[in-house]
Image (tube, rainbow, N blue to C red; front, side):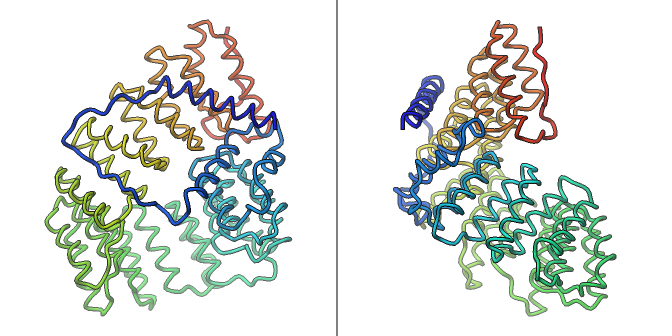
Length: 521
């Protein structure tokens, strides 16, 4: 119990220091107003949310592997609390927080060993995703083999897709094919691989825009697995992701020549390809062609066209398409509102964008991570720093934790606008919420802090990153090393070096991160 209190006290002292260093100034007066809703963002009770948040903080702040995590989890989580929703929620937060993958694995193992409930495929897939995202493939294979032995029903096409897509991203073409073969022979034992598994393999290459490899696999294996329309749509989507409209259309015609009937997904992919390249008129032409083929446009179709109208700087047509949603007996969701809001911002119509935010407020349509990113990005380009900072204040008041790309964008914006105090506050806020901020956000913050002489604060942020089991980039370390030496802070520099070496003993080195750093003299 004393160790828990000590850990809690240390965390409290650190957060207190951060709050003192990063006190947000009083909000500047502004005519720009961001609505704040009082209703809950999910169906979970506030008590459940607090429990989940507390466990995420315990996991992220724990000095694993210096101390065993399992015993700490056992002291903080009674087995009766390990429900399916609880485990999935904690792993979801760990994934969003870019937590150390080995800690997530320890938590999942804990849930398997100390619970009476059956684990869910969602919890297994989240753990697998966290591990493979950090390239811990040995641990990921170990986990799949354990699940094969204990809970084979959890082995799904999604888990296969997670593994293959990350191997395809970080390893070679041959390694991906070998992994597919290993899954067929050793992991998914007793399961006859067919077109669904083949589609997963193709999708692994297509999502990484590796169309040469995807074509090769298709040519090599299509005689064994009879392709279906989904197979062709996966390949079509891959060509779309490359941004090459000509390749999309060539493959579409090849698809038709092979006798495959285009469906709604096919048209949505082609419309998206044209809209993203600014060819909005061609997108509308495909909409008409789609309707003539008696294929009813979906909400996704209209949302894509609204976004395309924004790319083409045509807010009037974007609004018209949005109003057509109800006429087509569809209900606009957050995605449709986000697309229209993005269109307004692209056309520098801030007034209409803010009015749309108020409309979402009145209709109780909640802001999601995409909405926040859209609003921040739009305000940065059109309304200026004051409006961005006010939206940031509102987001913090609502305890909303932004996704990685939004956090990095905000950090860059604050630092470039000479508001390192807000950058440091954002860092402290994310850490307090149990997140391990992305390495790029740390690079930006360290650069801004060191350039303004706040070397001790830069050291504290770096130490927090290492304590949470995440590397610092070599460039950031070298910069901080120079400033610490200049300030005569040799002990702090040695501390960072020791922590890094210890981290390397159980984490594989990642591209762009240092492994062995001799202390400069």
